[in-house]
Image (cartoon, rainbow, N blue to C red):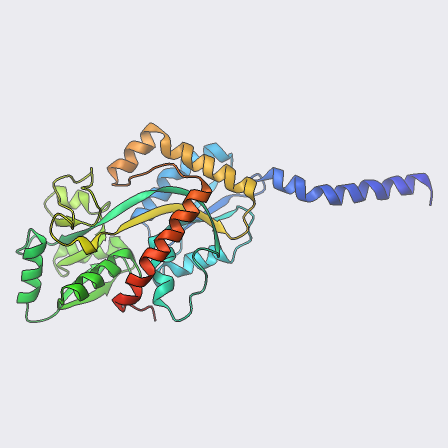
Length: 325
């Protein structure tokens, strides 16, 4: 074989060997990054994803697209991410519903909430709130229980959807206190509020974030928040513990996860970008206004956090009897 031919083959072989390294180093330059939100527009997950979007674009130097993929208790969007290529271009706005709740409402979950993902960055947690239409003669949890028990028919309670944390907390409330209640699932908080504000739905368990504006205007009444401490964005509303219902403590976490096997360098870049954006004074202030309590976590810490959440919620979800058909 002549020398030019040998040289050409050698260069070609080196190029093939180097291509994975070049590909890895190029992230995220090849194409836009998608962040899948498992709820409809207008919910807390969607609001937070869009709040972080501009800063993440700036930090990562690539377009970031937020896509809403609701349905099946948040498992449709989560499963899309779990099955995606682990290349850093498809990420999940992970939260309590698809990680800690919905998989345990199914005979066979489509993914493992811990092993099926690479959990990358923690954003924060937000409580839910027991909220009623002003026509309901209840301002406290004991009064709410008394009102429910006084009704001739089961009281409908709304949530952002089957498998949402509001759904499970409502079922826990129903079972623990033997109340006559029926769950009415909605495809997100926005459509639920149409009925709740109109009075055709009188009671809901929902993320605090999107209810505070209505509570401030007197259009809805916040009965109790499900956090351990009062929420800074609604300090006059007592906690479920203060109200005498400590077993109802529950917070919805928000984070960024990717498919299992996402490269370590991508994980590091995304974790740093999320941490930096969340720490910006304007973003931190907006998150606080939304009721999101945040703290920095490494990817390893966030993975342990999700694992703990799964271990804590799985028995409660199974005990609630709530199912995803």
